[in-house]
Length: 403
Image (tube, rainbow, N blue to C red; front, side, top):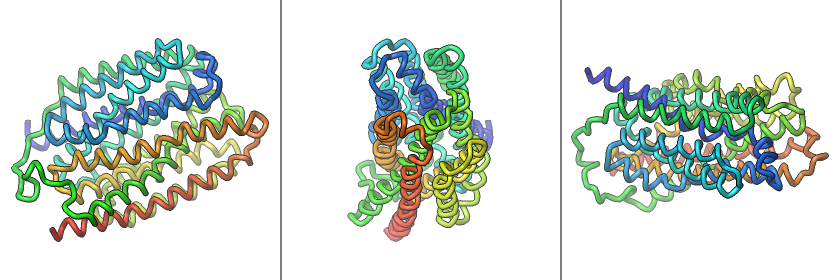
């Protein structure tokens, strides 16, 4: 197989795994109220905590997974990670207590933690000439997964209860993992240059670089908090304040991610010729859409969520490409592992925090759309504050080039 075909095949197989990874991240979102009733939970916050627990387990091991991604077969990490992710969902479908459900969610999240450090480093290694475009193509998988998950889960959950879609998605993931391990090829390690040879080399050789990196990770976790919060808040807002069914909610929330299947490769490619200005554009437009959203009429909710996702999700391949370009290949897995640990742990607390906030509103207050205006405005502000992370990444890139 030629190098070109090998690279393309590997890229599209990673794209398929990306879809499964994010299907499992948000499939439970339209099922919150069904899970609460079935497991006799005291509050909707307990149901949203399942997604937060999954997310914590997803992001907490990111640095150890980054170490493995720099030292071992990335193909095996990706395939076995998906299998563990799927088994967690299968286990969750049989849970009849909240404790068992939490353990299953954690197992699913642990499996998901294998993906991003290995896949991001692998894709940038395969396409060093256009990492933004390549990561944008891989992000199509995330868009498809994010879109399919709430629609499928909401439709099947309304038809057959929440356990049916959880079990079915888990079984699909096992099949996907087997196919990936069968057909994917391990990358060929390129000759290492002087900058990336020493295995004991520090991730960042100066204190200033560490400060810039930590600052960028923290600032982008505000973006992640807002993005995760948008999905959970929209689910609760549509059902509690506008009487949407789980199926209608799944379709609306899924629209966040559908349009990003187009925007990710487009903006990812454009950003290879101007990373910062394109990232600023999409994040500012996403923040404006988020702030406006709760003021709209119900007929505009699905299009508005689609517009938000079109711009917001496109920021991910741009930022990831910028980070990967700023550091040597030998440390990319570890650097990305630390980076998404910040965004994952802090950002995905939003599922639990927003669920608890809505619960504390009480039924009467939660039924009034105007009571959601403030929280949407705060989330939009978080997106704008995350723009500071772009300046930090630019500073890392400039200083690394001079070392």
